[in-house]
Image (cartoon, rainbow, N blue to C red; front, side, top):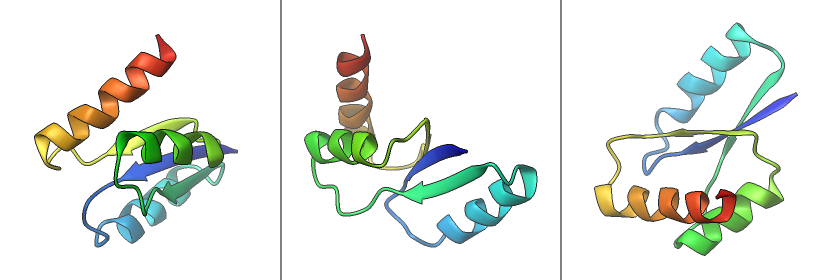
Amino acid sequence: MYRVGYIDDETTQYEYYDRKLKRLSPDMELVFLTDCQSQKDFLEKIYEEQIDVLLIDYRMAGNFILMIMCGIWNVLF
């Protein structure tokens, strides 16, 4: 089972991507990462949910998504 973390500032697309991933592969579970207000919150949630890969809305506020990605990069490398 692969756990795909989903980061988006709008909830409307979650169900669409969840259905699409399940059709492509029943071994994928989409996990909506919610209630995160900071870089630390997202990193903790990623570890807590044992996320394998992230699906991120590229149209989210630029600085916010950059902050998340920099935090992940710093932890990994």
